[in-house]
Image (tube, rainbow, N blue to C red; front, side, top):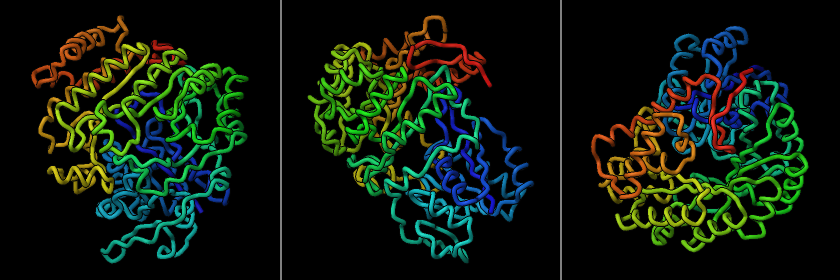
Length: 484
């Protein structure tokens, strides 16, 4: 048996530290352990021609593609179209959150043959190994122009998750290390029920690698140059015993690290312990400065919790990175002003904090989409329109669309230390304009609105033009990167 797994290109990939394609890496490991010959292509680095060569050499029956909502859909659709033109007999399988949420709509595209919903390891293995498709749980498929959805499979147990490793031999791991910076995931699931989050659609059971398993996997990462780790777990601090063991490992290996934590789960003791064991920054999903809106979002946190997190991180000499949202169904202009005011308070308490304000997009089957529909929201009805989704662009149903976009784009500049670089003229110009807008809360539409909307393209070109120079979010400076 043979298979190819693909991770499509991402928009503005050059201005980010690339996260390894864990979604397909874990599936690949599951396949390898069951004697399936598999190759991985990360199209942020690899070329489609390499995929074609691999197809010609191996002639796989199935190609799996992991896709996120937004611009990656556009790249994925082009890849699928090109593969189908050249190798029409190959079956293309989509996985990931977007396909899980909208399997029928995804399958309406002629270039998608199967969708695997939820976790993909078991279902994809059963598909490539020849099991009857009607008996494969979590599989959606087309037959005689009709779409069928098999029942959901159970999620992987903790022991099954701990059997999975990262098969680094399938990719070049050094591609994902930048000046020692490396992004890692050690768990799945989140027990909380935020109204806007896709996690509420699945079984919210947290499952993570044990501390011993984490250490074995992290040792491999250290061997290829990782020293500054960003954990992208939805709930990294879920298991206190695991965390204490990892703290000791971080200190022994002199590792600097960052991770996400709920504002109401932080106390002085934890902050100080994290700091003394290598933590440099904590991420918080604060979301809103209005308690009424926090309640709409089902955050189960308070404004007091958010302010307290800033005081604690300041006392522990930790940086903090806050994620906020606007454009929430039921939110008023007064609520938006409360959010901006609270951000300014947080910044005064802990000047080392960073932040960004995103515009909420009501994702399918979430509680928040039901509220949005009552206000006139109409979700995209095909993959091409879903590919246009951006977190700094407001859905059309919002009445103050232009103002919200201006707030989001301004925050992306004013809230990030990267724009404090004085030696990059375009950054200095953008920062000056954003400072004025932020100080006076002048977020009305105008010619600057258009200018700010294209700032990402400008930044991408500036950073790309610097060849092997990249911004280090741990040191807040541009550093030389050696390419392997």
